[in-house]
Length: 471
Image (tube, rainbow, N blue to C red):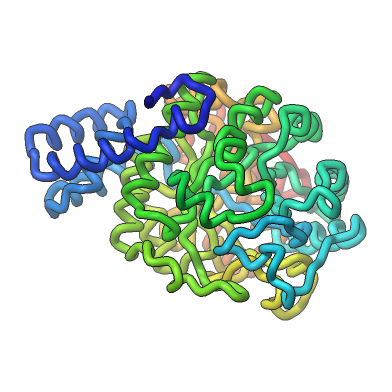
């Protein structure tokens, strides 16, 4: 029976509740009084539950969809302004003991070269990322208790934080590794991680077990309950996500929102981020083998609905998606994107993009400078800010600032100051020219005069060689 306050996976992600939700959505897809009521509720910026969002997903009325898109755009603007946070993934190891059928790292793939970075190689990768201008990483590793134990992950985090090259520094390390124990989550917290990210892949238990036939990841309950253990271990910020295309997208949206409702009900704070990957081609993985692929239009609708349903949650889109798709989703809710990503182990130190160990094909292969310039030309401020995590504004403290709107007094100036760092240290001449004009223009949008004046003074100090100012 569905119980969002339960700590049992099959009770807070209840299969029958999802099927009932889909039936309810089908019955009400043309119920305009109900749909009007849901849209009016969404306009209050307080979010929607999984049933309400599912009704909007089922509705195919063009006027309703356009209103939903307009609302998603406005909610994104209200809470996140025109800032887009930048990050890059760093793959530490592709050793893995799981048999996930959609991932080329599965243990039965005998022709993919297996690699694991030494600490010296980690250092070289981090310097390469710093030299692009990155300040925030998401580290990734396959599940392998022998090759990738928690001690290895912790050592890599320590190495990453220790490296200062020229003006470069990685100021926030997010972690995307397999479900683990409360004790190990405590160790990650003590190591100073930002967000713990774990993709559910699919909330459909039967499909989940077929897609993960062997290895520890086969345990649906242990995987699905990981966020509760992470929060018990002291990690304030957790990131959810499904791999769209593995299962029916209507099922996945309901499950994803139920998971968010569960975290809110039990821990008093929902997910810090929700990622939106779609299954892509990779070594020995053909996405056409999965018959639940979704069109760009459905993908956009899902993005808008997630923004409306969980208005305070950061949304992430990776370089899995093309420039065109990313542009569309930036308008509808996405607040974080990766740039210049390489999804192979050791990929950043190779002059040519390696393909033999990529976890998935990268659609958007532009340099970080090109992505930054594109964002600015599209009216977005590329932000390399990591201040909230470093100032202790995590979990419910971050959410309360976001909900009150006071976060703009921190985030807007922090975005401009970190953009100024990028322009001074890493940008091409054309990107710098566009960026300086943007900073002059956007300084006027810092809400509080006192903070605006401090921000301007800090930007001048950055031009004179100082670094790492934050509100």
